Amino acid sequence: MNEKSNSSSFQFSFYLVTIFLTIFVVNLIIFSSLTLNMNHTSIAQQQPPFNEDLSFDIDNVTFSHHMASVNGIQLHYVTGGQGDPILLLHGWPQTWYEWHHIMPSLAKNYTVIILDLRGLGDSSKPVTGYDGKTTAEDIYQLISQLGFNQPILLVAHDIGSQTAIPMQQLIQTM
Image (cartoon, rainbow, N blue to C red; front, side, top):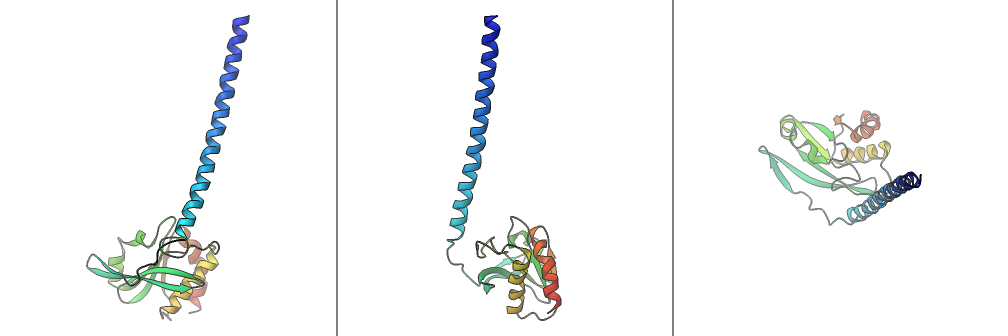
């Protein structure tokens, strides 16, 4: 009987230690991810100044980087091509570069405008303003600054879609 009691006691201790270690590891992972996210945010907010108007070629089509002050932030965008404007909005966690494969084809017939939504890429990373209405206002101000008075084509996916829906209403007023 004593051996059976020792065996049960060992199993109980083993399970108790296993549960304790699991809880410890989960807490360690959560704490370290929160710490890393805070460090990444502070690093991102201390970005060096952006080298504006840098040109580059993709498949023999020239594009250029730009910055614009809109809605209280700096918005990074890339343009290229000629024709009616087409605006491409990226998803999470991408940047303008997500569209680099199709930019040259579109630039043959359109003025391609690709940007980094606030908080991503080379755009400002403010503490607030990540809702669709605010990001749509960012883009509306950019389009107005660029002098596009006619309706523009809009392509979006993922988090770009949360901007595109309120953006449609703003574009219709142009």
